[in-house]
Length: 538
Image (cartoon, rainbow, N blue to C red; front, side, top):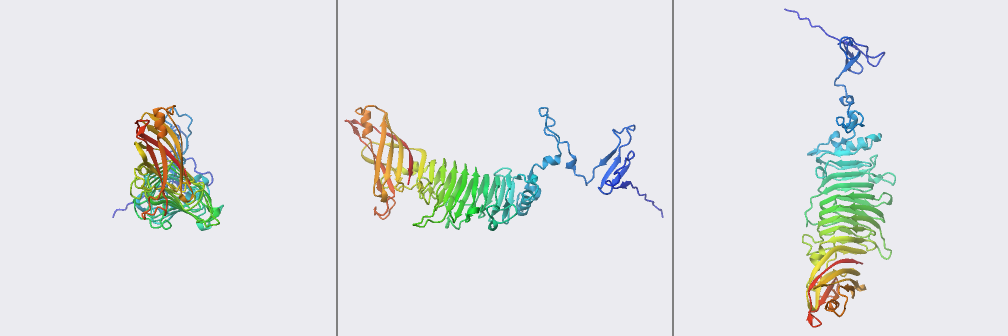
């Protein structure tokens, strides 16, 4: 039987971090550092062709390749950039961090609660503030099978709003302190703050973004996407879950200074709901947001005033340049509170249930109290579609209920016909104490600009009308002057929504009529048109 001898080949070995470290190795001689698990080979002499005398370290599985890549330089191959400096590749890549770095998978079926929670804890609870970076969410659908807690200071940003989707289903997102305290333990000095969430979609069924206790935070370009269909029944505002919800019940942890910028609230029964049980002065802002296909856009439920000691609360909300479209009931509703300002916003097909603007059924904006609640410089399709009438029996459905001051910049228009008796032109709600109509009347080639003031008396018992105007011809005795001065407006209070036939039960409508005589000084009169905008209030 043959005997096979196997020789063992070994290389020099020792500890790199003891004595003098790795010695100078001979040409092509190996040495293994036992303590650091690194391998070296001798360069050889310069005479033999080595570029320099010394040792070369050989890469192994124990080396950090990114740390060794130390020559990254921004635009290094572009001569127009000359002052960028070399950096490590590791440092460059660590400028950005993604939820996928912590195990999140955006496949729509993998539960991502643990991965997001780990990312929040590792970054935003880290004592090293260098790692409190923007947490990126790459495009994908991230499933949450239980509630998600987001701590103070989180900055969460999606790759694209429609592409980065957090699917919370029936679960909720809540906010906690930087140490993980829940809402029951919040106080004025330890509560969720400085949170920024942007460029992302929160997809829901009944789950809610619960803001209770949050302050000084911003939601920018966030889509809140539900499953509501226009006309679905909302049986209870108090029980119905909202896309965004919070409860204000303690003064020192009230939700305050929270901004929603360019957000979209789509297919939610209630998009935003706030329940306030004590007096508050809260500052909430909605700027350039869109509310589409909701039962109710924004709902504030507060403490109900109890006479004779009227309890009021400050709702210092600012709703600016927002669009409300396909809203079955109210775009905004509050049970009470003062200080809400809605400005430069658009209301399209709101308060009509599943119908169109020509058949309104509810107020577009409903204020529980009137003081300092205003709607200014807004637009609505309701008046043009529903308030012009040829019948004095048409009922008016108010656009803004209890508005201290309301102005719409829409320029409404209608044809003016000739008649020796008063013809109904438009209807207004009698719930407004005053109505101001700025109009431009054109008859033939002549024009008249003026301002109507309609004032509804206490008890809805009478309506007064004044008309201040000027017209294009300077001569009152000329045809144009007589034509313009013979044109008259009149106003009448009516109970047009009372099906009992008893007009004394409830006055609801002011009917504005006009008379444009067929003959003027023996000559035929002239038809024309009218355009106007409206301001009113309680």
